[in-house]
Length: 184
Image (cartoon, rainbow, N blue to C red; front, top):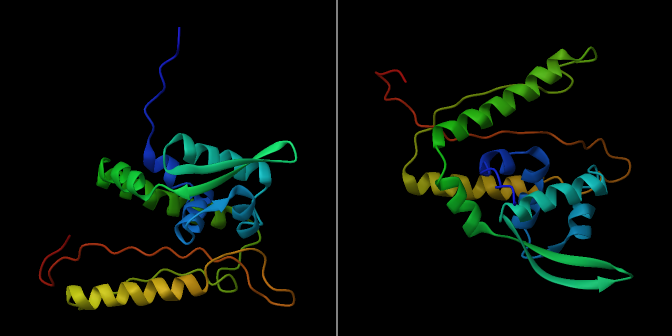
């Protein structure tokens, strides 16, 4: 008797920090091998990377474009299944997904502040909120500029020798804003 698979919670799958980075890496490239993804995510062990890639494949968010045998093993070329990602994310309850995302961010802060060796000023820990006035066209331009700026500093591989570069987790949220005379 075959055991029925539990329904997959796409947000739990896609919002894992390592899987987010795999998705981002694939989104910036048409196709990559697992080894190429590993070259971009040098801080993730090979075993962990392959486990997360397989989770994304099983969920249908990443597809195997081709396979070829190299020295006794199979090298898979992978691509992001953007259509499936969009369909899966739109089929979920958005408020639950937002809550999970915010709780994931909260957990990062909780873990950080539970450590003994913290220095928020030196680590440049901050939160900020700004309400901006923009037309839809201006907002589209803002997002394009933000995407370009983000790609300039996107985390790929090790920092160049002799630099002080380190990963920085920056969360950006565009949220509905209440009218000035009302509260959310």
